[in-house]
Length: 332
Image 1 (spheres, rainbow, N blue to C red):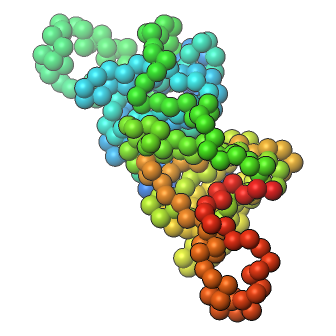
Image 2 (cartoon, rainbow, N blue to C red):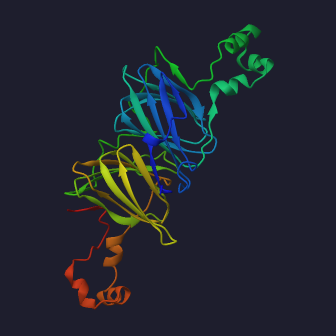
Image 3 (cartoon, rainbow, N blue to C red):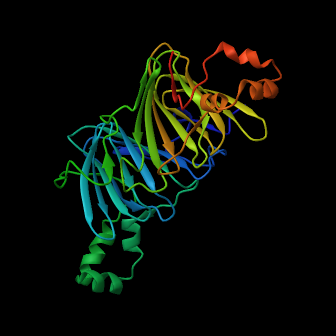
């Protein structure tokens, strides 16, 4: 039986696919358990671009899995043109028109999360062609034949071939190199890297945590009171467990190219069950997700309270050292 929280890109046909690239969107139609979040995978071939678009109902956060891309984003106050390469994340606020193209004559892959289960899309070319001849001419001060020429060359595909790109900045207030950032947690079980609002001030409604797990490494059972967590496995083999308020338990086998979701305050954990290291990008529908770990909760109770809760003698809990704070990546 399919899980309401799990998805695999291998089993979802791209909604948009051309010789220049493809876009696969995973929404609440494909994953009924999604809440205030959806997922996208964008692949661009060499010398290819994705048309200028904006999302009327969703912020968007991206992580570059492979290659380098140019991002041109027009905000209410400026035009931001910057590049993002493998291991970097970037943020696009709701309503900001943005254009993405592959750089350095190479292929590129980006994974996105949007803070809406059914994100809407507006396309710059369609907006242009929705105008009357008179409005278009008056707005851009063109001759009538100019708009007629565009209509004759009209092509609705979102993917295009691009021959020359504008120069792009290597820095932007909308991007952060999470792969090269400090690892606030490192154990024999793995590591954690943080891409939240304290690291990228422009974030709103979305954030990223990147982490790795060694064989048998685990993320501590935990929950987030203010955010759902969408886990995408970049590489490796994991087992992800999610407990829902109705008492149902989803135990999911999640490999590279697959993902799973745990809604806000749902108890969940992640275990590396493969022979190789696991690499994970976790998206959150909050710019600064909080964290409550199972270990610190147990550690906050006296043995007498725990004995009463679990119906055993208090000294039963003398067998282990109680954690005094979050473990996050469990030592092995």
